[in-house]
Length: 210
Image (cartoon, rainbow, N blue to C red; front, side):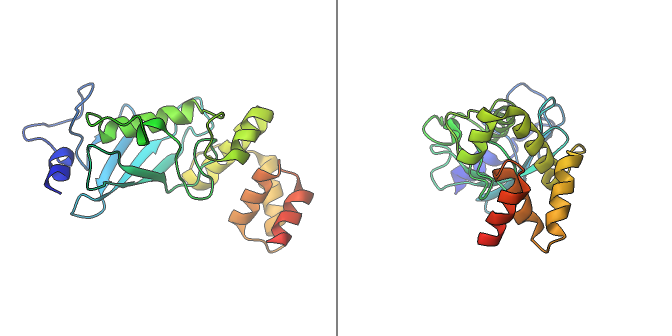
């Protein structure tokens, strides 16, 4: 665990994170205002961290804040951290159910010289440039490819509901409220409508079948 602590702690004499790449260090508690990313300790053993990234501008996620669970393995930095989204998100490369992420640097493209800052910036870049042909969530990826405008509206609504983004679709919001008025759970309604192309009838059938 000493190696983990050495890799994660703030280096002595450093006052800020303003350099282009403070690798291999990026300490818990550090934040970069330019990219709006930060990471904090969850426990004192440096085994679990809480990351946060801002939704990139000019994307459906703009204005949202996304919480990340970061677990540091015993073999870090020679193996990547385990990262998942805590905040729900509608994205082809992120599971809408579990928050699991499909990203090469969190798998076989990890290098020991990479930092947590690298990870968070890469996740921001993923939000801005999805890879629908290598999906984590097949339903979202299919919508992304078949109906890009519906995907954007759906992703923006999820950003509004779960990540605090300011903009969402009044049409979609009304459909959610109508189904919620029938007694269905709000989160279940959002998932059903999103996965059924916002068709109320098929979404209702899915909710009733569950």
